[in-house]
Length: 220
Image (cartoon, rainbow, N blue to C red; front, top):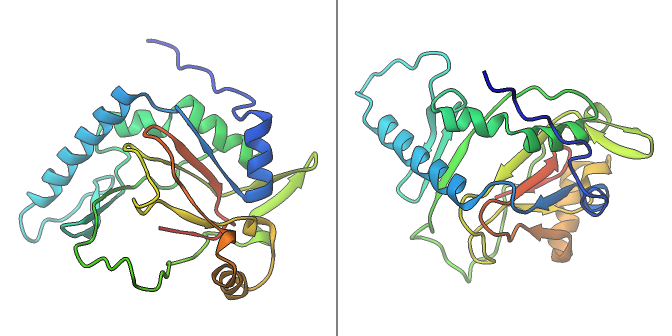
């Protein structure tokens, strides 16, 4: 049996780690190749077709994927880890795990794996006021600590875009720097809307990974 590739450490360059420390996130380019992105996209389309082909009343078994949302312009599939070998390979990708563990400050455990297939909502109005579903996954006092003057978070996510994300493609947005601030969530969100420069949007080529702490306020 082929030995797994070792996880790199450090997995982030000093510049990437600095960006993470300041902003609570960093976009790491070239994590996946073009061929890997294409293969994963094909697998996700297969999984979507399989889910839509399930008969009415289908009883999902543990470990099987499911639809969280199933709309013409947005499909959100959850619990996909064991649905295809490529998903498992992605979840255990040495570089991705290495990045996560560097931020966690210890061993990583996979708790969820999901996928989105997006296209523009036909009801989208570019002139409407922009509002995001801002949230975070864990609070600062409970979910984070500092060691050797570096910030660590026990709940970390890696989001890899399989197609290019341009400024009009609805990529993930974050409230930069909110990962370290222990004040009411609403106060930080209000501050971000009052000063939109605090809201950073992910714009990146295919194969790039957004690494962020779940104390960071974020949305799509």
